[in-house]
Image (cartoon, rainbow, N blue to C red; front, side):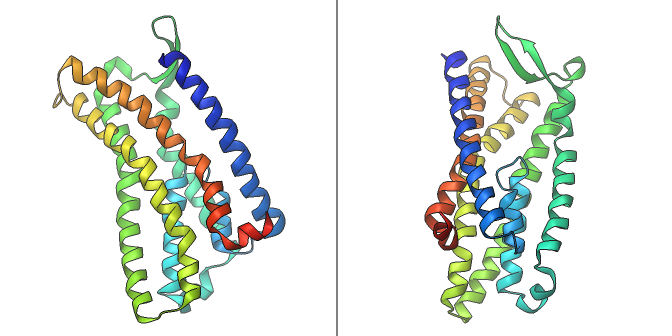
Amino acid sequence: FTSTFFPVLYSILFVTGLMGNALVVWVLIVFKKVSAMTDVYLVNLGFYSSAFFITIMSIDRYLAIVRSVYALRVRTAAHGAVTSLALWAVAILASAPAFLFFQEVDDNNKSACIPHYPDSNNGWKIFSNFEVNALGWLMPLGILIFCYYNILKNLQKCHTQNKYKAMKLVFIVVTVFFLFWTPVNIVLFLDSLQNMYVIDDCHTSKRLALAMELAEAFSFAHCCLNPVIYAFVGEKFKQYL
């Protein structure tokens, strides 16, 4: 079942995500001319480094609403481009373990792309899992809580409709991101416990392997939703369609 289901599912996700995100990039570049910092970050959202860009978008909203005087100097497309390059560099470095250890192997007469660690060393696998948990989930979550807590405090003092509209799209994008990426991070954490022999029974290991495949597929479906969010929530984006 899995040998047929997952290739079909990933093919559908690839085609849908490619078409939808290509539309977003086309609208942002051709019609909006990528004139603001948030626009630059939105162009990068469909890729691996989406955790970093969602985090920086929340910081951008925090600066615009809470530190508006300082934001006038730094919230430019040029600063956004420089920040994007820096985030891509960090994302590439963070994904180095995947580049180094993932290999195509024959698994019961089926080709599979899985991490192959030297001499069955669990240390690298545990490190890779915790790296994803820390950089892709815990750190963004902490920054987002700080940013949105202060944004909400500011909005309670100043009831401006434009500020609420400015928050709306980014807040929904962030919420959807964590709904789709939290399950795979939980499974990765449980996988780390298994590699440290905290979880040590065959039945649980088999369930965890299936849960990992399902959680990964669920998280990758996230890339197909961003265009839908922009189309139905972003007021300016709807005008250009």
